[in-house]
Length: 74
Length: 353
Image (cartoon, rainbow over all chains, first blue to last red):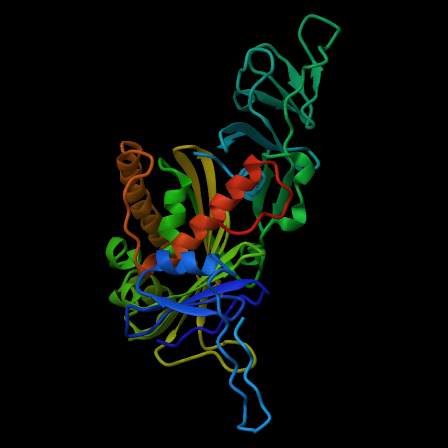
């Protein structure tokens, strides 16, 4: 399967990807927070609870520079 | 069950509305549709104010409808312009005239609060009225609530089991989907991209492709009424170019308008627009016949399901799995639209859930 690129481009788009070869769903909030689940009801509940329980993954600096700092999760 | 009232719904195809009176019921409201002599599609309440006789069982006189029972006569604004036997026309002698927009060969009607009827909010299906496409279409009355048709169309894995031999192959049910929801615009998008799939007869016979295919199904649902399935069919391994036209693939734009008639009946408007074999009448006949068969397979199944669900308690037990990710999203957006209409909210709706 070719994973489709995101088709909707708004500022408030929720996405759920069914991971190929698994039963796992990966949800991505418009805020950048991600979570996984094995069924969609739980994952929609988590996504739509935004911002409750949504922690954006720490941004990894593009190159290892001594002065660079990772973003603090909110 | 409640309807999302402050929304546009397809009441008919443009080709159905003419100088004959057409009866339709939308959101429980009986309507009569006709076209004025200048060509304007008109939708009035289908009940004479006098004794409730259906105006659709009456006759046109110019742009007015003359009630077939006692002759009460209404113009295209719903105003009564004649009553029998007396000069005075009662002030309350009028029937509702509903906002109408004809677009993309569809007749859209607004049943809700008319000061909120914004024609620019109607979603588009341009392929239905584009000379580069050939369209086959139909309408099937469904004896089931509209939500069952939404569920059906949002999860195409059922093609494998209900429509085998027409559009279903094993790969449809076996291929993972990606689901997106634009919460502000109220759109659900579900993609199922099959890299290497059996070609079902529906596409083998219409495209002439022999052998396996790369098949993409991209659903774009604009609740409550318009459902688009962008179907891309190509010989296996043929993908769109990075730039330019996707000339090596066949495209079918499959359009459904899902219009609640009553709480337990629905109009299932369906159309297949294609950009291939556009002049081949035999392909049109084949696709019309095949898609009609597929639609009727759904109608039969959903009519059965309606009977089952109608006999069960309101909050009957269900089980949702991964294939239902898009359907669940559609249900949520529909519930939000119903809720927004019920409280008379403005065009925007509140936070989800």
